[in-house]
Length: 209
Ligand SMILES: Nc1nc2c(ncn2[C@@H]2O[C@H](COP(=O)(O)OP(=O)(O)OP(=O)(O)O)[C@@H](O)[C@H]2O)c(=O)[nH]1
Ligand SMILES: [Mg+2]
Image (cartoon, rainbow, N blue to C red):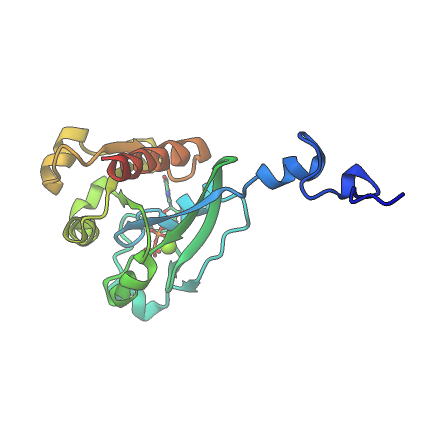
């Protein structure tokens, strides 16, 4: 007797409902979403990526030389010995459907030419500010505003405090009500995650709107 049935049910394409092959076919890898961590020199971008990344973050730190020390203002971060010269990279799985790929920008103006490449394809950005020198983040705020990329401002609580209220920061940066302003600590994983979720929500609202 001849039959067209496969010898074993497990060899049928897809198998019976609920079979391992069928279940495997429905499990999709998480959607990759690119997000940028930006801000002025030494505000805590590399620290934030390092705090949250579930992989060993890729960093491009170079020693701050004596010459550069004269150019880069280390008044508020005297312990800083290195600076990002290209970018930071890390990732964070939000849930089984979504994974964030984090790209940190270099903070110094002389590396500004890299920003377009780093930001390409990003759904949003987190602009970190050191409230003791708010003007250092104007360039980052302008960048996202002019390109219409959703972003939130995160005031890094150096030594556990920020110098201004959220309203004062909003006023000083002259951002619209649509730009969330939050306080966070770049060294705290949960705090960084909350700040990133604010950006993600903003970006999702943009795609749904
Ligand atoms: N006290 C305190 N120090 C912090 C905090 N975040 C970062 N730092 C320190 O501040 C310095 C700057 O941190 P980085 O993460 O290198 O800053 P960055 O923004 O990546 O700097 P560039 O890439 O050079 O622009 C480092 O010495 C950190 O250890 C914070 O929340 N509190
Ligand atoms: Mg850095």
